Amino acid sequence: MRYFTETAKYLFVICTITLTGCNKDSRTGPEDNGASPNILLIIADDMGKDATAGFAEGNVKPNTPNIDGIRNKGVSFNNFWVYPTCSPTRASILTGKYGYRTGVKWANDLLGSSEPILHQYLKENTEDAYATALVGKWHLSGNENTMFNPETLGMDYYAGLLRGGVESYYQWMLTEDGHQSTQTAYITEKFTGLAIDWIKAQDRPWFLWLAYTAPHTPFHVPPAEMHTQGNLPEYMQGISALPYYLAAIEAMDFQIGRLLNSLPDAERENTVIIFIGDNGTPNLAAQFPYSNSTVKGTLYQGGINTPLFVSGPGITRIGEQDDHLVGSTDLFATIAEVAGISSPEINDSKSFKPLFSGEDSNRDFQYSEMNDGASDLWAISDGQYKLIVNANGGQEMYDLSTDPYEGNDLLAGILSSGQLAAKERLQIELDRIRD
Image: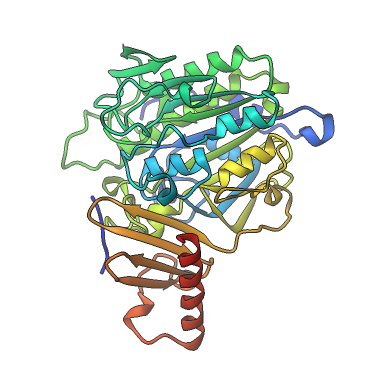
């Protein structure tokens, strides 16, 4: 049984300049010139494959020339797993640990202050060679702690939104350096401006985690120059949310272009860019082949298999797609290795940096989980078979090679000997992970 939780004018000239800047053929990586690369991690909030160009899922795509530029100048990972909601995905990246180890398994769960985070790890293991920052959505302080300063965990700078969302994209509470102020600027634009200002102030290699709230609800219309979805009226319940959702993505892409254009050519060419969606599309904007019960908030592919693009110095596979297994936890070790730290495995994190140049991967299984207080579930896959286990004893199993959108639960019938062996392997690995 399935479970579930819950055209304006575009600035074409600017976009053309952006694409030109993002598509330079001459690139020199740290291996070539000895310079440590900058690292830019961009997180889109609630952006699934069905809303992302470059994937077969979804019939209507937003116009995203800048995100497309990242994908086209690097590697697109087809089998990237996250968590069904945003907080555990963010915690898994920040700590390199699975959610059951940190206690962050659902939206609004609290990440303990004793957990070592990626920013601090970079500083301690590069002799403070990297400046580190997090701009944008935090969502790891629970519901109550509205005065928390993430800088106390070991990053140089934090500015953004502590909570998981806003009531208005045009009126929201900014926390910067531990101080709060009410903002009326469009939140996606403001986050970008803060990121640009911080980067300009750096005189050493930097790691910036830029976490947009877009395209998460509410479906508020962006400034007209940032999207191509037409003259949208104020969103009201009962009308299609899709154009509003796509408009928010286009506005985010517009701002990503603004950020990339702000970088001098040499700095841009020495920056590794990682773009991800933190979980699947929300049900109000989900497109075929996903349904309301297989997107955000679920352990089905529409909830946890999201976009991952990587481009920049050291990435020699230009415009390629990769089918190796990757998880959000793996971003910790990967970013550390990009920064020059020789630790291919850290906590539950396995670096996938070798995949940048066509080498092999050391990950044989993917893992995700959720616990929303009512359902406690885990998922594991070897790339072909996927097993979902409920703490109440229920199980589901799918062959993703023939049934990629999980329409046929193999456990509803009689398993073949090969399927039985696969189920046993998955169960053994799941038990090992959760031991």
